[in-house]
Length: 189
Image (cartoon, rainbow, N blue to C red; front, side):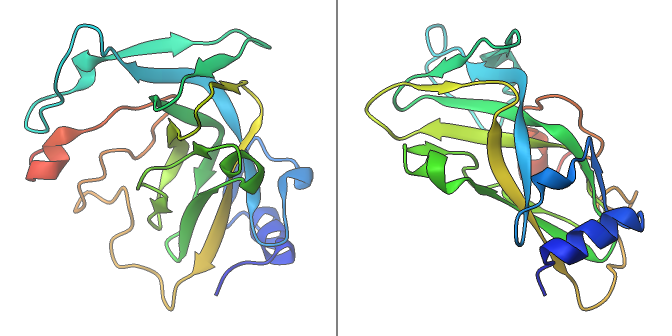
């Protein structure tokens, strides 16, 4: 069952769901709009020729912090990691789903390549996997509405929520833009 606008506001009011900062104007009929942060991670394609998934890739990316009212220009076929300004904390019986805004999608902007699913218990800022499909560059302004986040109630609370010591919750508590943890692909910490 997907939460409606009324239920989203009630879950937040009751403290079951946390979104910070929160403004009731963010609430859509069945989702909440999230805003683009000012931190980005970009691959340095001029000095690297390959991404080896068996190795730490953090050295392949450079961090860019944009000033207020200054856009990041995302060129055609360019990929960047970004973050939401909002921190989201899900209870143990709620799943989160991140989707793009249709107006941006119609320009050729993808805001998540594959990681649009947030497990119950997740708490942190959302990392966005942004890609420009268009033939023209697209400007990304910190603070702009970038995606929407919906919530689905589970049939029962999970036994081990994301962040539990039994899970390998690599991105729990993330703040700012966070790159890939390739060790998680191979079952290493």
